Length: 333
Image (cartoon, rainbow, N blue to C red; front, side):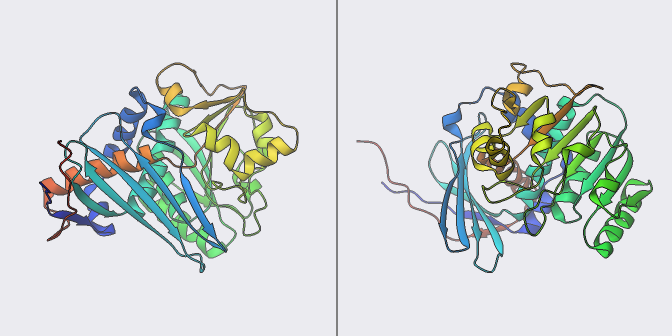
């Protein structure tokens, strides 16, 4: 017998209303602290033609009722959209479709916050952020949920953008946020550098020569072979490279490919966030080292957060219940 049920659709506004930084960070910390089978979050698949591409990531989180997949569509015009689908693990019923824009921004920044919270000592930190777009803003908010930000400096190549960002976070955080005139000018004194902006010509925006020992770097903008964000010297100087998906970070991101081509080995220094969280590969920022966290995004992050979002939306009556469903074939013989 075939079964079908209604599907809840969550718009971007619905997902924003259903999620908080505290809950998303706790959700991902729990996911990475649990035993995890790599087969439950296989490598992403990317279809390409001309300048457009489709990227798909699937995952079954280690706990919870739902499994799912996310598809990212990049148009020839460089526009990007995100669609996430959730299925019930027990029944194979499609239960939710989500606009993944906010989920993606929050899971990316929250994963970085999980890494920062585990690698850096407690207490106030000085933060430099390279970029003034949505990813940069999300990262500042996520980091502020796990650490007190004592100082914040921002660089963006557009003066109006960096100055507007500084004004916004001066008001949000209650501290003077400084707009820097160059990436190098933003770095001195920072305990944490967030690289959340690639240059238009893919020239690395962050140079390792600028970093002092005792600095953690979060890099989230180079996720494909043609993309660059940090230079080879950042990779060379990092004592430990923590990655959300080590195989993909090491073999499919422009920064790491450039380091390998330049003769900078890193394979013995790259560890998974899950191994760090579960104590198998300790990673601690000290006064005499540099730690790099590099992220490409994972289906585990997307689906764990989407499941949380769906459950919260159900409780709060958010979203639109669509009078349709996907037929489920009875597997009994």
